[in-house]
Amino acid sequence: MWFFGSKGPSGFSSSSTAEEVTQGIDGSALTAIVTGASSGIGVETTRVLALRGVHVVMAVRNVDAGRNVKEAILKEIPGAKIDVMELDLSSLASIRKFASQYQSSNLPLNLLINNAGVGTPFMLSHDGIELQFATNYLGPFLLTDLLSETMKKTARESNIEGRIVNVSSIGHRFTYSEGIRFDKINDESGYSSWYAYGQSKLATILHAKELSRRLKEDGVEITANSLHPGAILTNIMRHNGFMNGFFHLIGKYFLKSIPQGAATTCYVALHPQVKGVSGEFFMDSNISTPSSMAKDVDLAKKTMGF
Image 1 (cartoon, rainbow, N blue to C red):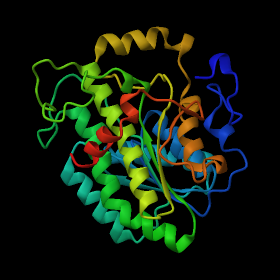
Image 2: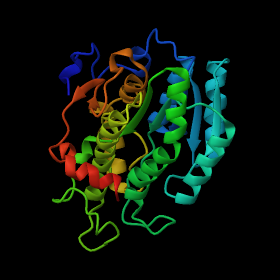
Image 3: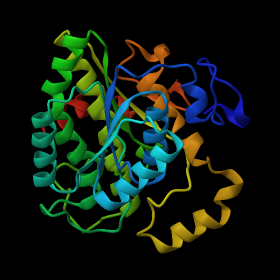
């Protein structure tokens, strides 16, 4: 982290906003999917991408909420190109349906921003998978896999580099001793909601790392990176009453604003400085260093074969 708002090598810092890190960038030739686009930094990511001319497909669980966000953005940016599609990342069936519908639309896909995430006590998804792992990692993994051919086709035909952006968290440092409990994902004994969250976010970094390696091997012009958006006052901890109240009470004194929180996502998605950069972890719109487990090559390979 670049303390006290001091700028890193990119010229940006923890206090930079999404608009600032994308100033002067023309994204009018790009189409992006943003998951979790109806709340928190997903809204700001959508707004700023649209402001820069990107055609944004909002992939949201609550379509009505998504449409409300779209209308609000259109009032500010009348020429914005925004579509809303239903996607529940905790449901494998919903992910497959979304991918099928997207492919049927014949839209190109330059940017895939896996932004959606949850922080919950122990519960299972529609498919009987621990909810945080299902939503934060397994869902984005499947979505990326199903849309990979569309991204490759777009990169070839447009001659524009594709970018996959996984929104992770500094919380990836706080996980189980083995990193990811592949054979105990649904084991409630010894379960910790904090470690389960960290486990899911560690997996998103490892996913981007291994995916980057495979894309390079295949000679595909698509990058894959992960990032920590910063400590932001959003509703991700809405299921944890105490922590949600605590963060809202003191958050205004040390947490990032939503525009600052969306900055690193928008930087990694759009900025020319990131062209050709792949397999990296970003924080405060600069390349950063994740935990040692997040650099474990063997563990990364396991996330792709889970």
